[in-house]
Amino acid sequence: MAGEAKSMTRSELEALIASKAWDDPKYKAELLANPKAVLQREVHAVDPSIHLPDAVKVHVHQESKSELHIVLPRDPHEGGSSHATHDHKHPQTVGALRIG
Image (cartoon, rainbow, N blue to C red):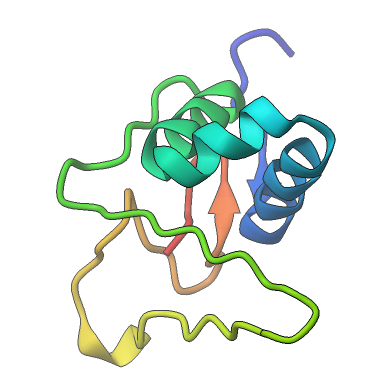
């Protein structure tokens, strides 16, 4: 329906961004140089009403054959939300964006 926000999980959004980075060297270079701008653009494509707060920092970690990264999500018991919104029932959903 027209006007409805799309929905995407955080994992789906991250997979989309990774796929674009693998396929497009310019996109990857921009992602590494300015990850917040790239993330904002991708989130905006899902739901134009969502804007990442100025206080939110975005980091990109690229793995290699000999180096793995584990992302430790924010502890939900710490309270507060460092992202656009937080919903304990539907964490990590983008479009009615829930990324944190």
